[in-house]
Length: 478
Figure 1: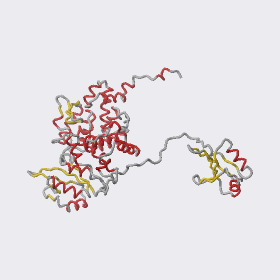
Figure 2: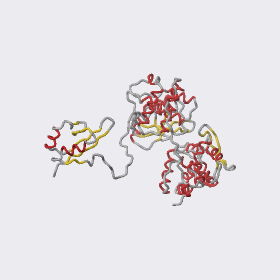
Figure 3: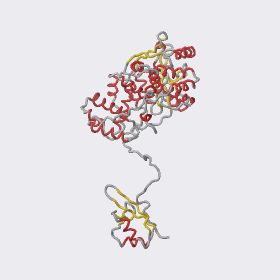
Figure 4: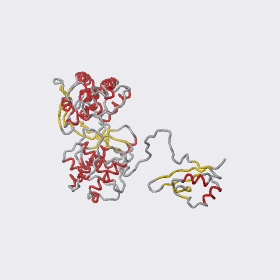
């Protein structure tokens, strides 16, 4: 059997060559050495020739008596359709804020016992956590409550969290309000490793946001993005970072985009946070119109049909769980709005739900479903809520994470396709109203949207309007 020389066509912007691949053969090597137009290329680990019009023919003539030239791989062709495959990502600032491992978690709950007030420490029974708390001199065991407690004094609580955070994650029950910016700062940075290059976010920036009356969710978001920004530059002092130009901020967000692990909306949040830091807090003259703002994709809201919502709600047997989800869907509420509701916010005479201090610091009313009212009355008799309509495990408001888990379980039990989370119930409410003929302006009021443009997105997912449109294809005879 004659030896075979396989030709591989290699073409790029700087060269157009053919590589010769063959099993070790002394006769072929000797023939190559006799022709100086064939040269060894270490970068391709092969003998190569510069391509021309007659290259393949010349090689066939040259080796005609000792080997066959195979051109099957010269111009490779696939007999399958192609698809996009991506292997690996560009990595720039990944791992800037590394999370540290903790032994466990504790929740701080404000408790009144007679005339005394305490910060009670609650946790899932654990010997390791108990040992850590026993060694902490800033808390002590209360025999009446059968809990470790801390006195509600700023300095004492500050020392307690400083000695506890290296080992335990500290959560706050929602009725515990922290106004001390130093304590807030430590709690917001408790999850991250503090190496020699770590820089804390300036407390003054936190105070600035508090004075501007930003919501706690916005403060947490902006604080995180500024913390990430300043820690992306190892070995660079905060003083130097504070003199960065808009070009440097642009470059940072381009690198963030390059990581491909952040959505466009997330990067825009970072732009807003850093813009507030430089222009608002520092008062620096960064030229904001030079900051490259990414265009956010206009994604259509994910909705369930009325039948699917019914299947999800019917799959829940727990009265409290069912009432929470029915409330969110029936009034088109945001999750936080539902959990902020108090008993007096349910107006059964006017069949209204009063939403206090919603997004944008606004109050509004939304509709109260008759079916929901029946459910609320049964719920009230069974659970007898005190302050908030839905109380959490340790009192106060119900946990947002818990509501998310309720919906996840209900979707799984109902067999309905997953089309989003809690907010999709709000989207479904708006879409179903539109499909039933409700004017868009009324839907805007019920949802609490500032602009009608925000509400108009539901016209894109409503079957009411799509069903009226006839395809031009229907006028063509096939």
